[in-house]
Image (tube, rainbow, N blue to C red; front, side, top):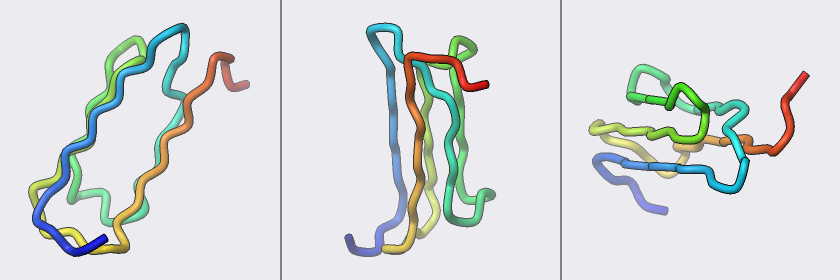
Length: 66
């Protein structure tokens, strides 16, 4: 991966899957994150300069986390 000036990531869960949690391993202020109220959709957008160390993780599951 090479440095670049922005990122657009979109996720939509189908078949009963939902987004349980997400983690951004970078300065959180560089990202605009939006989630649907039913936890089946999300987007992560940044228009800032990002480097090869930019990472995020999304956990998806059929079951509720307790």
